[in-house]
Image 1 (cartoon, one colour):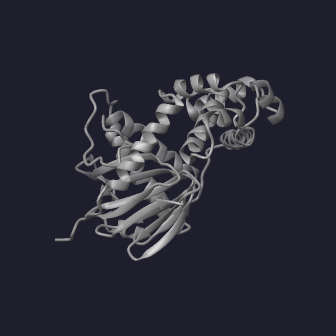
Image 2 (spheres, rainbow, N blue to C red):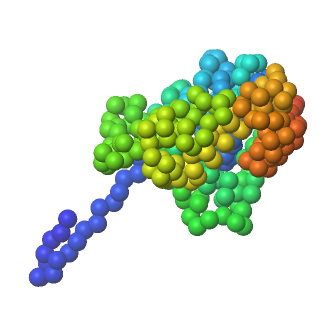
Length: 314
C-alpha cells in the first residue's frame, strides 16, 4: 500500500500474521527398535508427536489405545499420559519430536491421529537431517533430555528445523480442512515425481533380487542419465546407492525382528555371501551387523527399565 504526501510516495508495510510459531524444541528422536520394544509411558508439559516411519506400534494416549501403521502420526498435548509398544512381530522405525508452542492453532492437534503425505514426509526428513547436523546429541538415545549444539552445525540449520516443523504442521491443518491444493510448478516436475515414485516402488519390489542399473532403466523405460539426475535431486545419490541403502534398511528391520540369522538375511536380500553383506552393511551404517544388533538390544533394554515419568501440571 502506498500514499503520496507532499509529492513524496510513502509505503506502508504489512505485518505478516503467523498462525503457528515454534521457537523451542525439547527433543528430536529417530528410533529403530526391536519387535519386542516397550515404553512404559510418561507425561510432560509440552507437545510431542510420534510418527511411524516403518512398521506398526500400539499407543496409549490418555485412556485410549490406538494402533498406528506406517505413515501415521499422533499428537500428545501437554500433560497427556502416553506410552507405546511394538506388536511383537514387526520392528518399528519411529520419529518422536517434542516442542513448545503457545499458538492457539496448535490445539487443532488435540486428540488427533493423521496420515502424512509425501510433502510432509519430506519436511520431516529434513528436520531429522538438520537436527543430526545441528546437535551433537545421539538422536537414537531414549534418555535424551537436552539437545547439545554441535560445533560442526551448518549455517541456519536450527532455523531450517523451525521452518520445516511449522510448514509440516500448517500443511497437516490445511489438508485436514480440505484447503490445501497440491501445486506442482510444471509438467516436468510432475513427470519427474511420477518417475521417481515408479522406480522406487520397482526397487522395493525387487529388494531380494540381483538387479543392475541397466535392468532398472530397461524395465522402467528410462535412460540412465535422466534417472541418475532425478535420484541425485531427490536423494543426493545415484539409483544403485539408493537401492543399496534400501536393502540395508530392510536388513536392519530383519535383524531387529530377530527371526533370522545374518546368513539367512544375506541370502534373502540377494547378497552373494554373508561376507559381502557384512562389508556393505558396515559401509552404509558404520557398524557390522553384530554391532548393530547389540546396540539395538542395549537401547531396548534401557527403555524397558526406564521408569514412568509423570510431570504434573502446576
